[in-house]
Length: 108
Image (cartoon, rainbow, N blue to C red; front, side, top):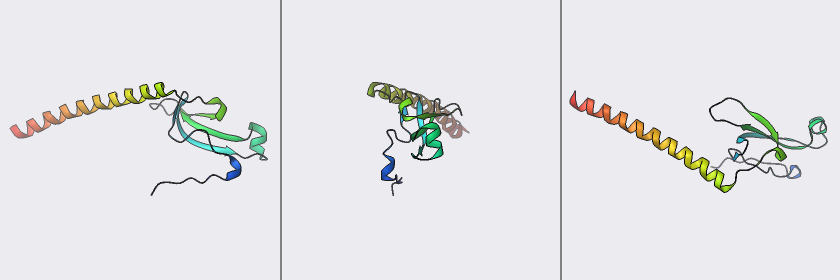
C-alpha cells in the first residue's frame, strides 16, 4: 500500500515533494501556514520546507517556496550518477573484502 498524504483543497498543492533534490538540498519535510493564522500574519501564508543541504551533516534549513530553486535535469542527472558511482565503488571494495574472507575460510 502506498503512503498517502491528504492536503485540504483550500491550501493549494505544494510545489516541491518530499525527498526532492533542489539547489538548496534535499527536502526532508514540509508544513503549511494557513492564511488567517497568527503564523501566516507574521511570516506569510503558504508552504515551508525543511531541507538538508548536506547529507553528511545534521544541519537543516527552513525555506519558503519562493526561496527554493529546483535542479535542472542535467544537474539532477549529475548528482544521481555521482552517487551511483560512489556506491559502485563501495560495493567493489566490499566485494574485494568478501573475496579475501572467503579465500581465507577455504584455506583454513
